[in-house]
Image (cartoon, rainbow, N blue to C red; front, side):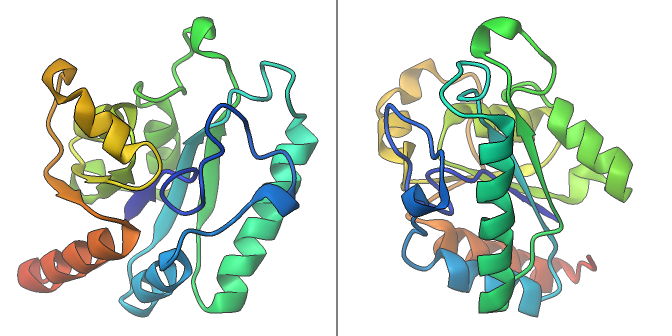
Length: 187
């Protein structure tokens, strides 16, 4: 199982703004093919994303769900598959258990799908993705897309190190597939 952050990893991040409609959603180069490769190799995907634009009143829950439904359809139409999308709609000030870096969404997915979290991978572009993945025993991969380069600039402030740092989702998927084959893992 692979947990993947959405904005900045699968699609372009609208820095300083939120994706409020499908017209604003733009897949990053190679991301659709990456998701297709995961499916072709029998590796399931769950998207885990902070979406505080809802709490901030910048978009509605209905808008977020509409974008997610179209996103999921586009992935399926391309030949990929995403098992589920879990998102936190709270603001950072809410101190909820579901906002990354806290692992609440990972625990919920684990319960819903019977996932052994220590046999998972987490791919993200921000240190909170890596912290959340590390806290549940997941192998972590930081991508340089989205906020990845910015995240690398603050490396001296990190509380954890990712297991891998790669250029993009495609490179992360290559590593995950190689490790799956090497370890003869079943998903």
